[in-house]
Image 1 (tube, rainbow, N blue to C red):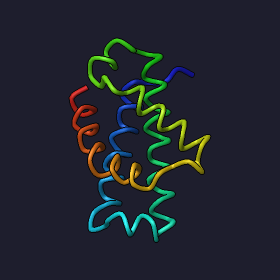
Image 2 (image 1 turned 60 degrees about the vertical axis):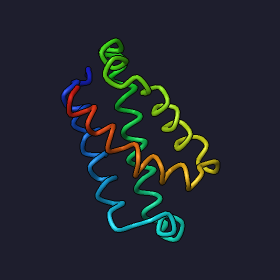
Image 3 (image 1 turned 120 degrees about the vertical axis):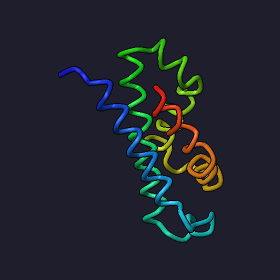
Image 4 (image 1 turned 45 degrees about the horizontal axis):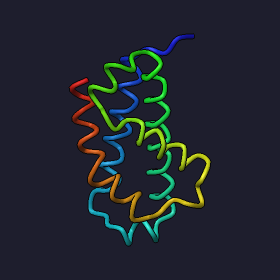
Length: 110
């Protein structure tokens, strides 16, 4: 069954919104002490990265124009999925709090 672009974009939007919500009133110390927060963020990045892989198959040119750094996001997804023991809390927190809002805006304008 082929993937639908609108559904994939919705999946990314929801994951971005959930990451933003999960991080409200939290900080890096919360990430380090709350295993559920860490797992939730990691899962949302897996969803975002996988959705981007699927979008790339549908329209790589538009994806590259809209989200030029999408390959880095996919790379982070791969790290979360396959190099789980190498994830740096500081990087995870930075991506969640500083980069996800920008990604959400790009997805909304896709």
